[in-house]
Length: 531
Image (cartoon, rainbow, N blue to C red; front, side, top):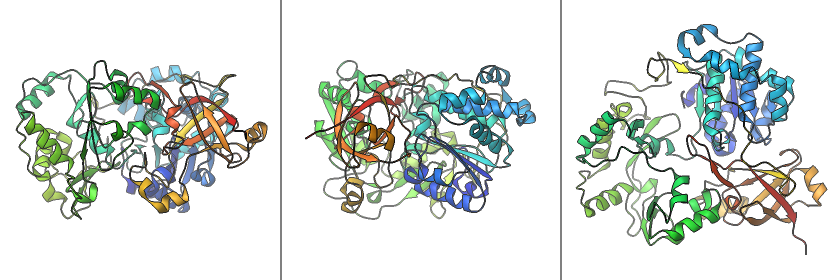
């Protein structure tokens, strides 16, 4: 997030898109609701009528995968009304004219037609956002998990830059992370092209820095493979795989493809707190501790680094991730110097500029520090890009994007658009929440949401068993007839459940830049199960 969660309370307008915030990020969702009740305006652009849509001043029920068209149309409407911030654009940005050359094709009428919403509502949303003094955009994987996901993010940025709502308190572009320490994992280099702190492995100066810090002259300067690429390379380029705290047998697209890849490995290690569906394929399972059984830090979605303190002893032979990694390092010949999380944090500070002023002593009696925090006197950074942007030269850049259809659209054989997501009662692949009887009593099995119109046409009753299939597989689940919560021709399934694992159906194509799979949209068909 460019801005802090606490700034939601200051905002005059909140724009939510690509996020079922109250269910996937309930703490932030609650704060958005509180802001709305204090008088903030709310815009929601989503394929489903999520709970926040019921409170929205404008709800745009867009077709899945049309985010770029929507955002382009909003920028076009802002320019048409003369509501852009010319001073900000001239002083703090580059490439505006190139963006305008693309945007001019996306009149509100054309964008609205692509998205399946009224042009008047699109215009109203654009003008509300532009005229608000303080306005934040909140999005999640409903923007990113497309074959055009990177350009979807760029389009969000274009919208904010057009009206000068970046680098200011109570504004910003705020991606909501999918799990509690995803931000921290990325910060620490759990990315195919980065060392800690988003320092690029292909940068010779960065490579030399880490060779010296780690005492290893054979560090590669070549970016690695992303998760989606890894699964496709199993049994070919990749013979051995080490999976930590991840369950791709439920969470990755085209699960049959994932299973095939795991079976073709020579050796698979899985490190987790429970025996997951993925761990069933492992040659070795390393039992790890959960958050309450170890010391450490989490970096949350607003870049806040917070202490995690051990509350209970771990069961059996379970060890912390740090202990496991350090011991493995020693056994393969690298004498790791860490004996505690404190020492690991000190090294992080020494090689990661944005964490340079963060240590356990400073975190002891406060509610965390937001990076960048470059030195021990620095108070942390509440919002990013205040004095200047982080690009060389200090200016932000407009990155225009044309709307492209998802890689797979409905046709005569597969006439429905399937989109996926999360629900409030379960967490990711249910490795943890699935162990709770109480949560399973509320929602314990998979389902597919279908509009009342489509259900009547197909003769499907609420709670009836149905078969859902795509070009990659099929599954059996129960139908939930949900009125207009999903549009005609669109169906929704949560991805959490083993019974009816929706990622058997999803499309493993991915974004050319970030390599993110197109989990949010594919073509499918639904059939009654008779007898």
